[in-house]
Every structure is written in C-alpha cells, then in structure tokens.
Image (cartoon, rainbow, N blue to C red; front, side):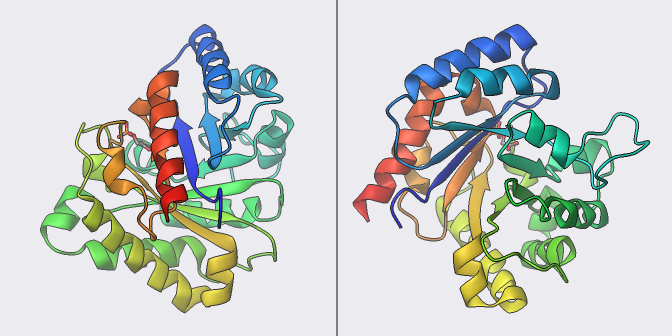
Length: 260
Ligand code: PGA
C-alpha cells in the first residue's frame, strides 16, 4: 500500500503559457526527491506539451483538464485521448463541476468519455462527482453521489490493470476557501465506495479504483484529510498554483500515509 496516495493539481484556466512553464520548473525542482505518492499537474491545453517536456525525469506526471469521447473527426474545439497522450499525459480529468456548470456537460457525456478513455491503457481517468449546495441542504447528497457514479460508470468493462480515480468534489466547497469537514468527506467516500462495490465487486474496486477528495484544500487544512483510509488522495485547485504550497500539501498526504 505504500505510495498509493494521489495528489493532482488542476491549474484550470488561470495561467498563461509563460506562467505555466515557470510553475512547472518550480514544481519539478520542489518534487525532485519526492517519493510519497503519485503526483500530477493539469495545465491548460496550450501548455501541455512544454510542461510535459519540463517534467521529464521528474516524479510529477502530466494530466489534461478534459478530453472528448470520440477518437478523431470533425469535432471543432475538442481534443482526443490520443492527442493528449501525444502531449505526454498520463491522467485526464473528466466531468469537472465547472464544465458541468458552464458547458452543460452531463453524466451521459461523462459516461461516453470514460468509455473511450478506458480503451487507452496509458491514460488514467479522474472522474468528478459531487453534490451542489441545494442537494446537500435538502439531504439528497447520498442519492446524488450514487446516481452520478451509476450514470458515469454503469455497464463499463474495466480492463484488468486499468486504474480509475473518482474525485469527490462537493461543488459548494470548490474555490470557497473552506474545505468540508474531513469526516463528512470520509462519509461521502464511503457512499461512493459502496456504490462501486455494488457495481463492480470488491476485488475490482480495491485493485482498480481510488477515491480522492477535492475542494479548497490547502497546506493548513490538509492535515485533517491525511491518514483517513477512505481518502486516497486529493485534487487541488488554488493550492496547486504555488509550488511550495503544493509541495506542502503533497508532503502532508505522503506523511499521513507513512504513519499508518
Ligand atoms: P480548489 O479547486 O482547490 O481551488 O477549491 C478544486 C477543484 O476544482 O478541483
């Protein structure tokens, strides 16, 4: 179980090309001796290739923030799994809540995208789920998570060694500056895991799936999330935009692992 924690930074649409390259160099330097888990950064599309070139030889891997469900064709503005693989990606975020909110991405699209990505063994999907504030307030969170996981993954055949990451991101916590209570995240992770167990069986879930948390994690609140068995890693936004802050978050996650 050593080194199985996952720490992924989503740089969103926040950096220029030059800023992305500077951050990639700083991250590479900070993480040069890091062995406490899997680490990845997800820059914007125009920065992917050059960030990937900078990260060569570093334990930090490259991820894309999105991908399309067709492999090629007349799909203006979209990018295919093969293209992000060519750019050097090992991970891809699918169905981030900002895309669900601003671009009407739904779980039918997310399902099709995961299905396509699963035919590329070198690409690990990071599938986002999470309830909004209204759903939480009206006590529908458990059902929403169950439903999202079902819609995203039902009927899919998970190839033997394929890893799949589910990112639980309560929409109301993203970018708010306040993470949810670790115990609440842990409970949500249990719901997700029970749903996955029902769908795929315990063996596949423990071999192939990881469930990570995202939403306003930083170097101060991360401690509450480390060492919790059901939280296998973190997806960070804001905290990933500063190499030192990102490193502190990753270090805490890694040391949480070593303690148990
Ligand atoms: P945040 O973003 O850490 O800035 O809240 C998390 C995310 O959107 O994945």
